[in-house]
Length: 390
Image 1 (cartoon, rainbow, N blue to C red):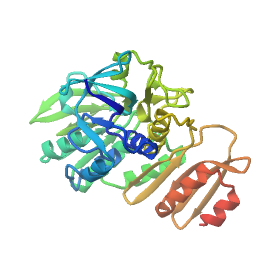
Image 2: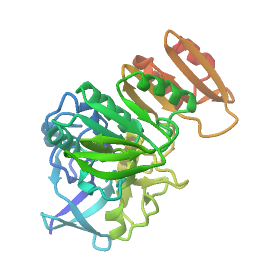
Image 3: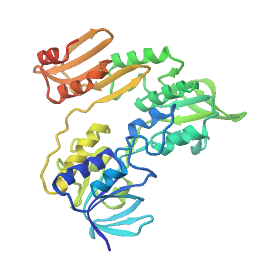
Image 4: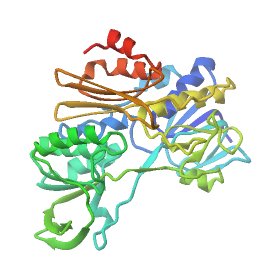
C-alpha cells in the first residue's frame, strides 16, 4: 500500500498554507493534497462575487498546475470516506486506500441547511461552493424574483450581484441588523441605509417565514404576514464546521474539531486547521486570514517545528455598492472608543492602555492592509495618526 509523508484533506487556504510551511523545511518529502471538488483549490470568498460576471473553472484558483509540479505536490480529486488513525490509513471513495505519516484536516465549513415546511429542499439553493454558484448562474438565468435568506456578508454580496443582473431581490434576516457578527449597530445602520437606497428590498426581524405553494411556477412565501412570489430562493444562513469525517474517525469534536495551541487533535499525527478547528476557548474563527495562519502553524508542527498559535484579531472586509467595510469588532468591555471621520472615511478605533484592540472602518480601502498591520501590532493612536492620517 502507498504511504505519503504528509496528507492534507481539504482544498482550502488552510491546506495550501500548511503545504507552504511543510515545503519550507522539506523540499522533497511526498505531499498529497485532497479536494472533493472538481477544480483546483480556489479562493472561496470570491465565488459569490462572480455571479453577475460569471467565471471559468480555474478563475480564482489559489495556485496553478505549474505550481503543483514545481513544488512536487500531488493533487487528488476524491472524497475521503474514513480515517483509520490506528493504522494511519485513509479510505477513499474512488482511489481505494493509502497510508499517511502526518495528516492535516482542513475541510472547512458546510452551509447550514434551511428547512421551510412544505418546500422541497432542492428548491433552496446555497451559494458557498463554486459548483453551487455555477448552478445558480446556470439554472436561474430566467428567474426574475429572488429571495435571499440571511443578511450576513455572503447574503448582502449575493444580493448586490443579482441587482447587477437586473433581478428583483428581497433580502431577509431574523436579526434586527446586518452583519451582526462583525458590525456594531452604528456600522450596521450605515450599511442598512445604503441597501435601502438600492433596489434591494430589505426585511429584518423575521418572525414568520412559510411556504404557501406555487402559482404559475412561482413560489408563494409569507414573510411576517405579507405574501410574496419568488422564482428562486437562496439560503445564506451561516455555516457549520465540516466535522463528519473526524466524528466518524473518533477524533474528538465539539462544534469543531478540538485542537490545542499546536493545532494537534486528540489523535497522534493528526492536525486540524481553519474553519473546521475549534480552539481551547471554544472559538471557531471562520475567517480567511485566520485559516491561512492556522494552516501554516499546523504545517510547521507537522514537520516537528514547535509553533504555537496566537489567536490574533483577523478582519472581515466586504465591498457593496461601492462602499468598503473593514471590521475587527471589540470583544471585550471597557475599551476606549475614538471616532474619526473625514472625506467619507469613518473609523471607530478601540484602545486598551493606548493600544489598538479593535477597529471598524468604512471606506479607505487602499489602506486596509495598513489597518490590519496596526491591529496586529497594536499601534498607539499617535502612530495611527502618523502612518494612517485622515
